[in-house]
Length: 445
Image: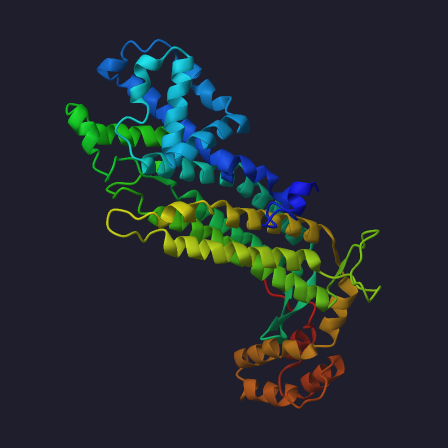
């Protein structure tokens, strides 16, 4: 950890900087400026592709222009920030930066077609969803799938391990440890499926969404179709109609889906935390680690607690973004601008959580003897099976009979169940069927 991390206000760039540094290329101020440059350059290239009459003789290939963005360094971003001190406008500073680049490249004749007919939000509302898309697809989703792989691997490893289920915290019909892990795997997979159907929205339509300036300058061009094609070429979907800004409804859908994924992971963290407290799992001891500053024996489930806390932080911000961004006064107010600078915050907290989850899941050691003991102490849980078979046989009041047996406040063990079965007025064949039941075998499909 460097001095900068020690003096950072946010733990994202401080304590947890090692876990979040992969997001700096997508959500930092430098990243935002670079993506703005990218959108401006791609827009200029698209204008040349029409071509506009004044751009027919533009002399260099598209790749040469793209090198401006490809070679855009933090040092170049500082030049933009220096210009912003004068303009007090961040997108205009990018425009001036690119015009300066054009002049350096001997392209000053065409510089006025940079940002032609656009408003700032055509750039921001294209750059920011593109940043989010790249960050999620290239960093976040791959890390989530690593956690999913571990969960699925554990589900397969423990698929035949019977365990006592608990509904309302009370002993219930037995299940399998692998199946319980598979519940979480299938929930995450379903949300990833839904996530894959979502589109990343971009607004691209001029000052108030109508491409007024474009139509005034070149009325013969189908500018809405141009905008649709341009935005699609960036891997986004153009929102239309809009005001000056995107309505953010589809962006809110992305945040909502991320929140659902996080909520599933919170549920997983709490269940595993509880299983550890029940001694269904031990945790691998890491040499040198301290569980408590006062109690030397402790090995705390800190990875799952850290993950849970960060997932809850992420969800708090995702909820705010989802509820806030779709609301804007009339054709626009500026509140979305400062809010959207926090798009990376919930992704960062989520990434911290995924790192902790991977670590925690990797330390789990199944304690089969403790799980088996719990089953053996709870023979009452096969009462469901007994009363159901007795119902099949037409036995009078089977539910009430089993209720009277199992709710005496006394421990119900194997002998208690065997004595009860012996007392039943049913055939020996049915009694053998009932005797074959046990907490460890009564696990269903």
